[in-house]
Image (cartoon, rainbow, N blue to C red; front, side, top):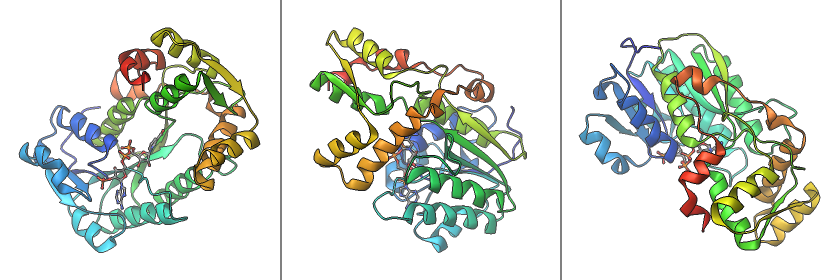
Length: 301
Ligand SMILES: NC(=O)c1ccc[n+]([C@@H]2O[C@H](COP(=O)([O-])OP(=O)(O)OC[C@H]3O[C@@H](n4cnc5c(N)ncnc54)[C@H](OP(=O)(O)O)[C@@H]3O)[C@@H](O)[C@H]2O)c1
């Protein structure tokens, strides 16, 4: 969809890994001048390179509503990137609701939000799914137009998981070898940038997935082939998984979160594949195999 001067376009969390990639794609979008892009971050100094290219960089945190209101001034469309705050119960949801309310008060017309695949009530995924669903509900009640980008799990996260598994010679999962529709962070960023720059006022949800699914057995085979190291799959119960992760030193809420993600897989929830990335960006998303092959060195740990 062409960009028709409906900016300024604003991105929160702009110095994060996803945020920087979104800014890269916005700058490459035909007809979007750098001065029409506002990058909001807690760490403006981290975006000095983009400021030098003409991007408007402003300081802002979802923990400071007054400061965020100043940072949001003038934005027509914005992308709210979900935060990474999981250590204090309820804090992340409060941050997101602050961003939504502040955007509406600042007069923004449309908010795009990085939500989570299948986050509806009933999702077994702890911590993350309830936050994302509550934010989607707040967007729907905000009076702004909205787009929920329901990202599934990043393929990028597999690099650490598989590197660790290769060291141990086993990939442990409570997902019962059910398929997962991983998507790369880069494809998420490309799709988010396209949704932000779109000339669309329609409120909608997109499932942001990769082009196909992989099971743990298929993942282990790909990793073994790419590295020449053997990797077997060990299927465990969610209870065994939680216990082992806690014993390995993970804080209990994080161990429970990881196990709940496996339960989500076990339930078959992540078997769905969408064409949203292709439709939004005009490019097919990258497969897990291609991503892992391109990042083969990281599998060595
Ligand atoms: N689908 C998945 O598998 C997956 C995996 C990891 C993360 N995520 C989610 O996607 C988001 C982006 O991923 P990423 O890879 O870019 O993560 P990241 O590099 O760890 O970045 C963390 C993000 O949280 C933002 N943030 C933290 N505290 C904030 C606050 N008080 N106010 C505003 N923003 C705050 C940061 O913004 P600044 O530093 O610029 O202020 C940054 O954008 C994560 O924050 C998380 O919600 C999804």
